[in-house]
Each structure stands twice: as structure tokens, then as C-alpha cells.
Image 1 (cartoon, rainbow, N blue to C red):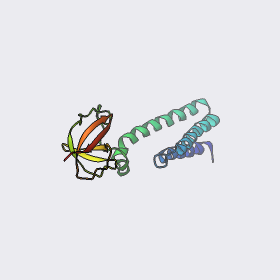
Image 2: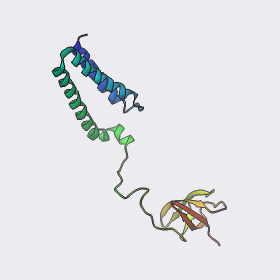
Image 3: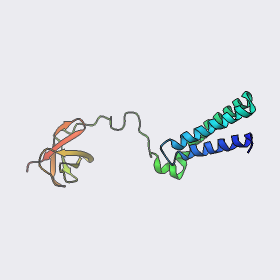
Image 4: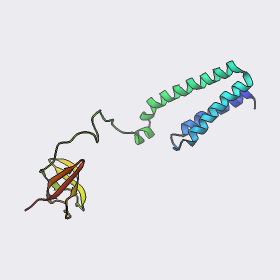
Amino acid sequence: MGAFEAIIVLALVGFLLIAAEVFVPGMVLGILGGFCLLGAVGVAYGNYGALPGTLVFAGLAVVTMAGVIIWIFSFPQTALGRRIMLRQSLEPGEGAATPRVSLLDQEGTALTPLRPSGTARFEGRKVDVVAESAFIEAGDAIVVVREEGMRVVVRKKAA
């Protein structure tokens, strides 16, 4: 095999290994693919000199960047991309850091048995809660007695 064929084979194997990294996480295939691309550049420098070696390096860099850009825009549209990516993005201020309305002294219903933690409904919203002391059965009326950060502590409502 000549130097030109070695450059082509190393570049193709490098790109295929980098693409396979998506399916086999761990960075091993991606690193091997990067070494193959560097090997292609090294073969070009060693056999053809500085100018052709630099052109091969620039060509591989352009192809790599174009591939990344195409991948970023096309992957979410594929069947695999739709399966493993988030369906909607969070807006700034959404998510766990979003301040919530205080539930202190509100009454609700236990949706699951609270032994001691479970889920309850307050004004149509599901909330993860913790029973203060005794177990509480699903369907029992409860009242919020404390809020400790994101932890909502409840007790069974007195009859």
C-alpha cells in the first residue's frame, strides 16, 4: 500500500471510529479515531513534505468541523436521536432552581402510602412529601407542617 492509500485509509478509519463513539461511550474509540487522523497527517508530512502535509491537516480539520456541524443539526432528527435526547429544553429559570409557592399549612391528599416518603396532591399539583412520624395511607387527608428546603414534611390531618 502506498502513502496516498495509507492517508485515505487512516482518515476513513479515524472518522468511522469517531462516529462509532456515539454508540460505544467511553472515549476509547474517539481517541483511537483521533490517533488515526493524526497518523494520516503524519504519513502526509513524512512522505510528501510540509506543504502537502499541511494541506492534508487543513482538509481533515475542515471535514471534521463540517461533520460536527452536520451532526449537530441532523442527529436530533433521526430516530435514534429522538429516542435519546430531551424532548423539550428548559427555559432559563425553569427546573429545580425555580422557586415554588410555599405549601405551609396547606391541606392535600396522599396519593401513595407515605412510609415515610411518597407523593401527595395539593391544589392539583403532585408533590414529593415526607411523613412527620407515623405512616400515612394513600387517600388520607394530610397537612403540611414544615418545609425544609425542597423537603415537604406532612402529617395526617386530625379528624
